[in-house]
Image (cartoon, rainbow, N blue to C red):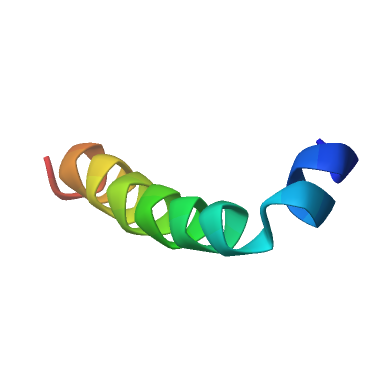
Length: 33
């Protein structure tokens, strides 16, 4: 994981943002329902 972050910081950052948004939606659905 450390090698990936150091080798592709931009990709890791972009993936983290997408994962955060997806996680928020996934956690929000069962929370509302």
